[in-house]
Amino acid sequence: MRHVFSVRIGPVGFRVGSAWRAPIAQLETLYADYPKPDVPDFSVRLFPARPWRRVIRPSVTIGGDFMLPDAAPLPLEQGLLAAEMGMNLQMALGQRRYLLLHASVVERDGRALLMTGVSGAGKSTLAALLAARGWRLMGDEFALLDPATGLVHAFPRLVSLKNAAIEVVTRALPEARFGPLLAGTPKGDVRHLVPDAAAVAAMDVPVPPALLLFPGYGFAAEERAVPPSEVFVRLTQASTNFVALGERGFDALARLVKTVPARAIDYPDTDSAVAQVEKLWAAL
Amino acid sequence: MGRAVSDGRLLARMLRTPGNALALDAAGWTALLAMARAEQMIGTLALRLDGLALPDDVARILADARASAAQGQVAALWEVEMARRALAPLGEPVVLLKGSAFAAAGLRAGEGRSIGDLDILVPWARIDAVEAALLAAGWEWVKPNAYDDAYYRQWMHELPPLIHRDRDRMIDVHHTILPLTARITPDAASLLVNSVAIGPGVRMLAPSDMLVHAAAHLFADGDLAGGMRNLWDVHCLVEQFGTAGLAERAAHHGLGAAVARAVRLSAALYGDGAALTPGDHACLRRVTARDGWGRATRPVTRLAFYVRSHWLRMPPLMLARHLWTKWRTKPD
Image 1 (tube, one colour):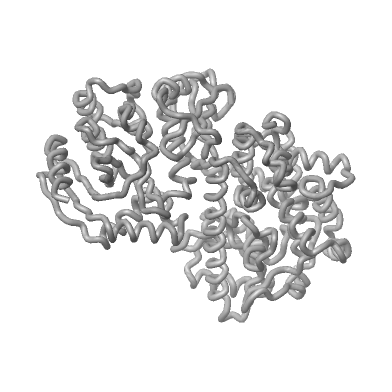
Image 2 (cartoon, each protein chain N blue to C red; image 1 turned 90 degrees about the vertical axis):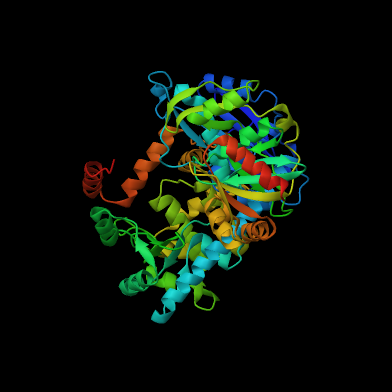
């Protein structure tokens, strides 16, 4: 590959090869403070589907150790998004050490809060806003649950903010670093937030999970306990590798569900969500 | 070191002599792991290198690969059991082919091997009953296209693939080991007669027939895709069972040349070497066409072998008609 970048995010090393310089330059800038892996866990490749598409109407196909057969290519202006999607794809399809839960994770007092839910529930936004209030950002996409220890490992890749969340978070974090605004992607407008120095400095410190939240945006503020049976089923659906891990995955999830309380919260706006979360946390 | 060999031979060398891996630098390891993943051999590699003093990152990645392969075998053996239960009322044993046979029998070729579909062999006379029993037990058709379905039934050595609706796993039901359109007709009945019991209701082919099947798949049917893994199977089978009587058995099936080539190539890649023909060298170029990013390389060689595979698979006029139909009904 012509251009290569490598980075270690939490316990996982990546190398990204690209036929174009631009996405690699953006990754180098945004991940400047991250360490490099010795031997990466996964390779991502960004390449033109046909040789001429490197130059004429350049379009980025996402490949790597693990690939989806019919992933749609992205225009070169969205090459950064392609790289991030490629890294997520390797995790989703290839990660076999940790049970992956589709969740954002923040830490306070040495314990982790996991927020999971459907796309648009506000996982990334809430994680970014809590980070602005002194929580440690551990990740906005995947919680890495170690079946051997029951601890959650940080995976603080760039926080992917979408549409209205971009404005909300830029206002809450005026000092933070952001990637370029990627308009009109398949996920709408996307802008990446660089996790703060504290998140990167502590990314090798795993912590025990203390609370599981299922946030739901767009409703009057409300809260209810979620029984373990429901949590288990919802988390099997929120995991990309639950089946692939077999018994280890089952045991890890069962242990999480039995030992960690779970709440569903509805919230009308982000301010009340943050207040609800901090109140629940204080009551633990 | 990573630069010295930049194709599939790097992977072959580490499988042949695991101690060589200790000399790899970070770039060499990165290339090796990408190749091993692309060839679906990372589990095999992980077991071969187990016990060596490896760099931390590599040890971690290979430990994951070992765990993943072990879980893959659990799932594959469960599929075997499901098929056994489905066919037991017919009085038909499940005769396993390829990966699931190696795993179920605990053969060296199965150590760390990734196993995709469940491949089984049944007598031609029982194929309808077997199909009905599998459909009743929850397997479903995946080829919605009428032409493909009819093509399989008329000309192939197996039923159209079936997927289980709950477990999402595929079963390939073979009645012989080469397409009916191929010029060579192996003796399918004697494959079954000579099969060996490995458990109640579960059998595998006799060792020499497993080698014949591997060679048939590689050289008389396929385009050598996945050749690194198939030749590793051949290498392990030869190492474990020897080659006594193999040539006669291969000749009986009309596959003497394919088997001899498979044995030579596996020795060249993974064993003590062999005297190679020009054709063998071309095959090796195809088999090792992989770079340090896991990408397929040598497009011209690959295309040539792809064309060859179709040429071997069916007579020219039929090939033309087949390609014409496939082209006209291209789904997208």
